[in-house]
Amino acid sequence: MTDKVRLTDGFHRRLNYLRLSVTDRCNLRCMYCMPQTAFSWMPADEILSYEEILKVCRVLADLGVEKVRLTGGEPLVRKDLERLIGGMADLPGIKELCLTTNGVLLERSARSLYDAGIRHINISLDSLVPGKYKYITGFDLFEQVWAGLHAALETGFSPVKINCVIMKGVNDDEIVDMASLCLRFPLEIRFIEFMPIGEDSFWDPGRLMTNDQVKKVIEQDLGTLHEVGNPGGGGPAVIYTLDGAIGKLGFISPMSHHFCATCNRLRLTADGRLRLCLFSDREVDIRSIIRKGISLEELESFFRKVVLLKPRGYEHLGKLQPSCSRQMSSIGG
Picture 1 (cartoon, rainbow, N blue to C red):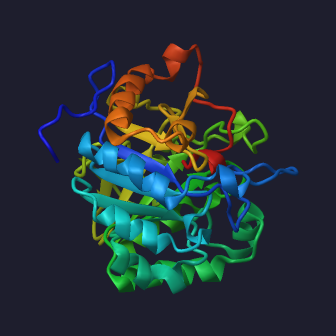
Picture 2: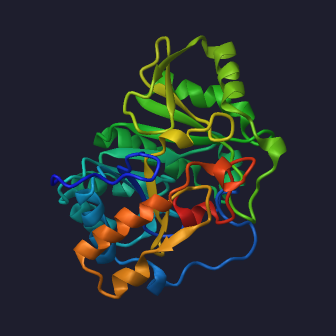
């Protein structure tokens, strides 16, 4: 990176992490992520091209963004994703390239993703029971995901994390089984609280199980959890270990333990909208200015100004709890 002043918002939070959605399309239809009624995918010409994405990332890397996570939808359904990854790996300043996937296509893609430059993989997996997995996702593809998980471990990705959203009456009876995976595999199992994301969502406050409750269930069966904080820094997960475990457990608690004060993230949607806060529906159109031919210098100045619009937190938006109207699948998580 150059000696330029790093990107900072109006509350002195350094912004060094970009979550980048490369597509809104997905090969699953998870109940908490996507509309459960009829909907349409974004038209192809509204999705940022790889060249447009790289232009944005080149400027952000020069301003101090060090970590980029590719998301979707499901990023592996976008053609030639490795070409984008390779271009991002070549950008000076980018230290971490990560990918969040549902794992369905991971077995066949693991080696090419690794060779392109991805090192950290997150796999969304909310059930270890094939029938329940089908109920949550809409498709009977658990075995493909399980194979993809093992392919990621065998290829050498590290860390490999499992993202699990616990919902009362749906998969809360699998908490111990999920947590036990860290006893058998070098995985970080991350329990994420169910959130009201999307107007047409599966959200019901009666389905919310806080991570304090999840931890109690784990300790009753598997023993004391030992907090190690967040060794990687900059993320919302609080990490724990269990005696005898070769992996770890992480807890992300946006509903019960808010972490807005330490937020270091920017989000770029697949259609080129800069989202400064997950829980704010205020977005900034980046696609239009890029397609008008804005220079790198002008884009840098634009980012410096626009990040000052990042809110302090969801409470300062007049909300009683974290929420937003846009679907998670179109935001990118």
